[in-house]
Amino acid sequence: MSNQAEQMTGGLPGVYPMRGWQSGSPYDRPLEEEPWQDACPVSVFRAAMVSRFPGRMHELVGVLSENCFDVMVLRQWESRLQSAMNTGLIIADMTACRNEEDFESERKMLLPIADSICVPVMYLVTEEWMSRASGTLLQEELMVWPARSRQTMMYQIQRAIRVHTQAVPAAADGADASRSIYKDLWIDRDKMTVQRGRTPIHLTKTEYNLLVLLLDSEGAVRTREELMSEIWDTDFLGGSNVVDVHIKSLRKKIGDNAGSPRYIATVRGVGYRLAD
Image (cartoon, rainbow, N blue to C red; front, side, top):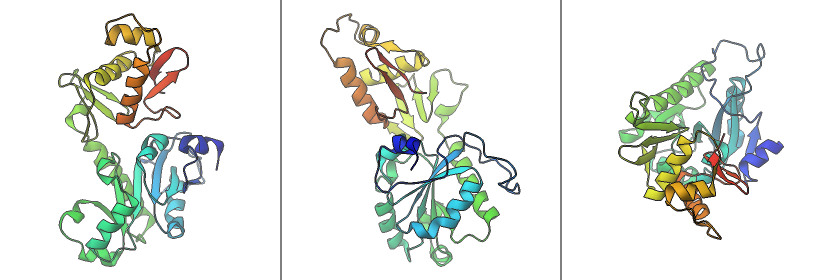
């Protein structure tokens, strides 16, 4: 495992890095282009493969890697992985399922926090299972595996990513000045609400104000004294850790990690700023 991957995942068990480890989204790369003709860009799209049988997924991992995806193979998805890995796509292996009951059971095992996942999820199923699927399961992103062709597989993956991007709530509309976007967080200033995708994040008024103040600072460091003055309307700091306590609570609610921050970075001995 590379040093960078180890730092990003915090030594998480059952994580197997495949190829590089950067972020971005080059999924518009032409499929007919041979992978060895041009090197992948420094920034590539990051995908997580979740399977109880990772040995079956070598071909899929290889094709994704050739198309400039960085792939991590996991046996279970955890909430802390989202902020640690900044993943843009999850592919869950459901090929062991024989019926819809198996599907739900396997999903709970692989994705125990499925309801709070804010990135597109694609489920790999057998052709036999697909022919018998019905109801709401047909509304999920399903792909028959083994795939009929590499082109078909990559088309479906790219489509799943695009559909998810287009499904972002109206808060993403840049025409509304009352709404802000920070990475995958959508902030409605009129309603004082924050959400990730379609999932609301319930913040206290103080936590919300802290987040907005850091957003408005556009990456500049805000000292603890400044935060105390603007949020609590007082210059008193002394031995109080009130700022740190509220930042810790805010981080927990937005799924951030102080050790490898995605949203809020700590500037030791000074204060806080938006993460890069």
